[in-house]
Length: 115
Image 1 (cartoon, rainbow, N blue to C red):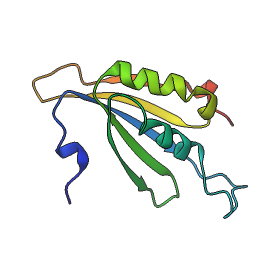
Image 2 (cartoon, one colour; image 1 turned 90 degrees about the vertical axis):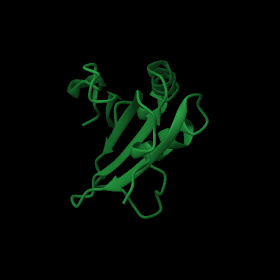
Image 3 (cartoon, rainbow, N blue to C red; image 1 turned 180 degrees about the vertical axis):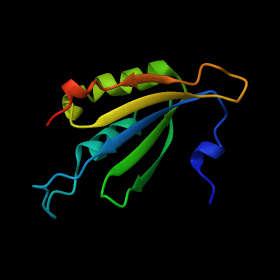
Image 4 (cartoon, rainbow, N blue to C red; image 1 turned 135 degrees about the horizontal axis):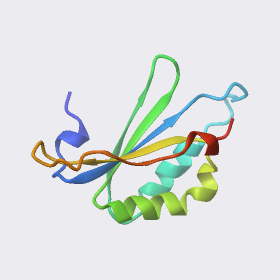
């Protein structure tokens, strides 16, 4: 099965959001923090698309793709009030094999995440 990432022209940025299911989450609570960030992302400049998956342990993974790092920064700044440290967010630059700049760019520090 093809992925959106397979169709994007490099370089681009992948913002990987991992959210852990909450023990006190009820069926009536259908909008999560990750959902709110995704909703915000689709209206931001530089947004290229997203993909989602769920791990067998219930973790939700969302990858939002962006054209420029400044686009990711604008999105994360706009979503700060929403996220409030509840998510594990990591941003990576994706490039071709000849580009040595592929590395983690932004990781929410462990101590700033909600417990």
